[in-house]
Length: 308
Image 1: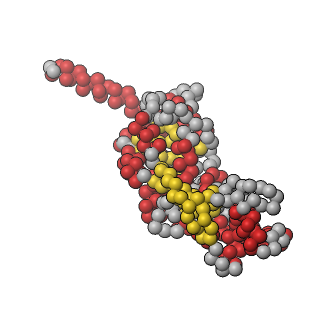
Image 2: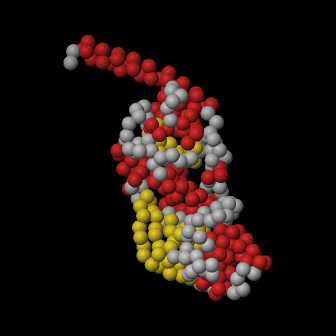
Image 3: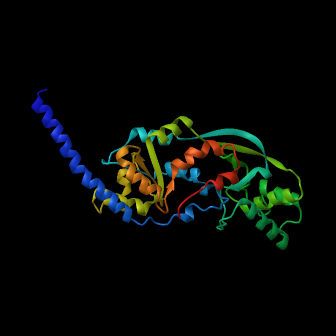
């Protein structure tokens, strides 16, 4: 290569960099002006439903394909999509005896109040005693795990264990109030009761966890906010976040996880997200998950810092 050709290449590269820099600065300035839509209802500090658990919520977002990648090109990222698909692993443990005192919540409930399972158990126990739905422990227990008095067959038979926090949730379609009351009654009468459940465990693939933390930052925001961000990023009001989904097909959820490459030129953008309200930093939860696995669920909640 001649010196002239080399010089022309360097000049062209510098020219390209100079063209990109103002656009980057402009995006950062506009990003700071965006007011992130409130998502606090999806991440309450107190909860007994599994959907509110932050890492489980991330798992569900991945399953729903509600992922956007902040990238210059609207192209699929096979490496990232494969990484996310294998970040969480499910394992059928089989039948296992679980004590009622070890449960910290349920999968489904019509109850909308955001409280810890301990509070929920107290409420349902007191409600049962005041209204006398069940006169004794054994009749309530039978109703939870068998065909109930109304002929409903949605008995509780399954449980989900979140490996990173050792949290156990009853995998129920129905009977959350009755199960909570049973757990409290068991506690009051000091029965130390248990039941055989079909157990499914959800855990984090540590190899993929490291790959993600080494190469990406992930932030959960509202889909509305994500579309606003990409409108500014692409300078096109018709752009929406689905066009930047790394999977072959995107989802349509209210929450999405925005993934950003962990490279120096993105650091200012990452810092904006790190300090934004209504923005959940997934990396923080993945980083502490190893420590949390050795602690109790209540300790896990005490590590849940967020800006709302």
